[in-house]
Structures are given as structure tokens and as C-alpha cells.
Length: 72
Image 1 (tube, rainbow, N blue to C red):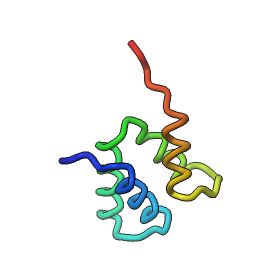
Image 2 (image 1 turned 90 degrees about the vertical axis):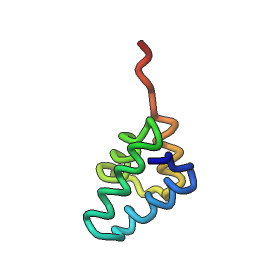
Image 3 (image 1 turned 120 degrees about the vertical axis):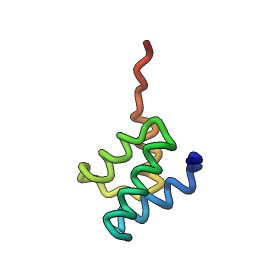
Image 4 (image 1 turned 30 degrees about the horizontal axis):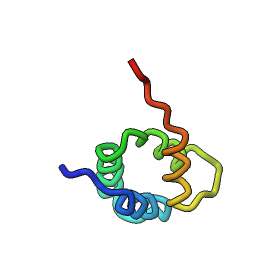
């Protein structure tokens, strides 16, 4: 599976924010996000668990900014 670029990920975030698609489609979109960026968990947390009202692009930027990889 190819990795999505930033614009494609933002498009999927928008679809998820609008609750578009079936459960299967939404699960696939989340899977695609998970396989495209290392900060996918931050995206999911902001998308589903945050009370903040963010645009898809702002959500992406905040998730990217908040990402702190574990360096071994």
C-alpha cells in the first residue's frame, strides 16, 4: 500500500469529521492514515477524543507538532 501525502490525509480527516462513508470505509481511511504518518495516533486522538473544533488542516498540523517520537 502506498503512503498518502499530506493533502490526501487532510481529505480523509475531513471525510471522517463529516462522518461520511460506511463503517468499513471509515475503518479503511483510518488504516490508510495509520500507514502514512508516524503521528497517526495523535490524529486519531484529536479526531475522536478532543473537544476542540479544528479544521482538518489544523488538526493535521497540531498532531504533527505534538508528535514526540521515542528515540532509542
